[in-house]
Length: 88
Image 1 (cartoon, rainbow, N blue to C red):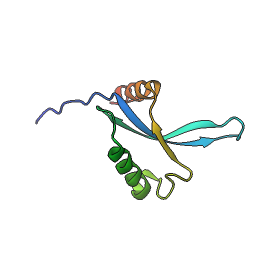
Image 2 (image 1 turned 90 degrees about the vertical axis):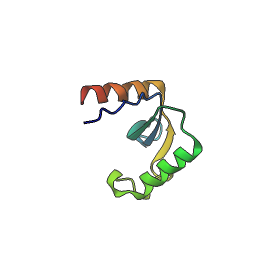
Image 3 (image 1 turned 45 degrees about the vertical axis):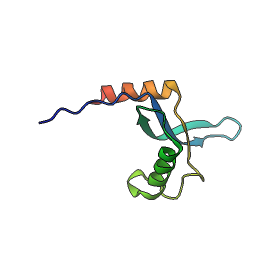
């Protein structure tokens, strides 16, 4: 069995929605996509299309309406890496 190299995630894009009262909304992350290199506009467009059309993600037709994409913060990237380490 061939051993696969692990990708070091240094960048990310999150799909998020805002929940709670309009004067104090909280950000709810629905999906994280990690990248080793800075994502290009083409990467972002491809992710938006996949999330908006693939029923597996549960976000069909929601991107740009109720769900938005943004660059992941350093904290989000570290937190996602921690969760992956704990669950693998």
